[in-house]
Length: 257
Image 1 (cartoon, rainbow, N blue to C red):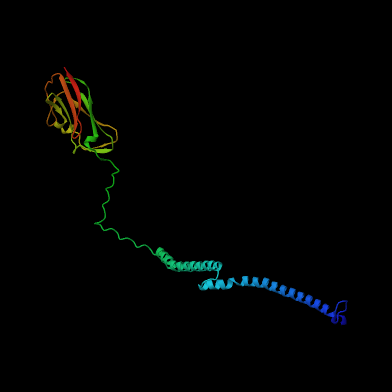
Image 2 (image 1 turned 90 degrees about the vertical axis):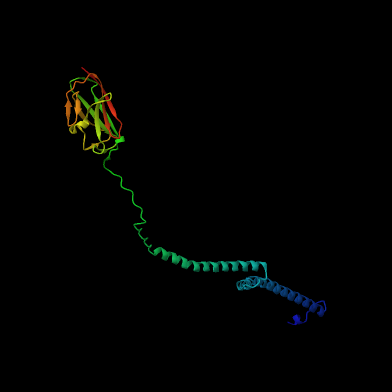
């Protein structure tokens, strides 16, 4: 302890104290610099760590920021807050609409008033499914018989009626007549005898001919189904079948003696 307080050596005691003072000052300087460095190191980190808190608070409050980065952060935060607020407002305002739409969807539709008889259009008449009345122009009439007939003998004359569709031919509404002439001379006709006339209703099937035959005794006819005993000279005689409203059909015959 004595040597510590009173240094011993070739140099004067004062020299040793100066040296000790220099060493102590150096050590003290090193310690000061070390504490300053550590303080600056850890103190700067604390400042950087705690800096965002005031900036975020400033941005939330809407005040000005102290740095570009804090301004950007504040603008982003404010924009997000505004977006959330707008979304909340939109959601709040959309809720009544959705509720109203749902309520409207659940509301039963009001039945429309039935049309009054005066405004209702008359429906089209139904299409008949059964046979209809024949149109004369749609009925094809043909007559056939012998082309050579001997005077004084009898011959058969046949008439057919044909339609392309199913229909009913009413002879009371559409008269039919079979007549034999020679030039302008009327020789024989079904009109002279009621028994020779075709009457009533005739139901025709599509393309199925219906036929009827008459017998001509090569004499003239007279009213009330009478025949005139008269010698008919040889010549050309024409049988004409006519359905009123339709085309005439003829059969040419040669009467020989």
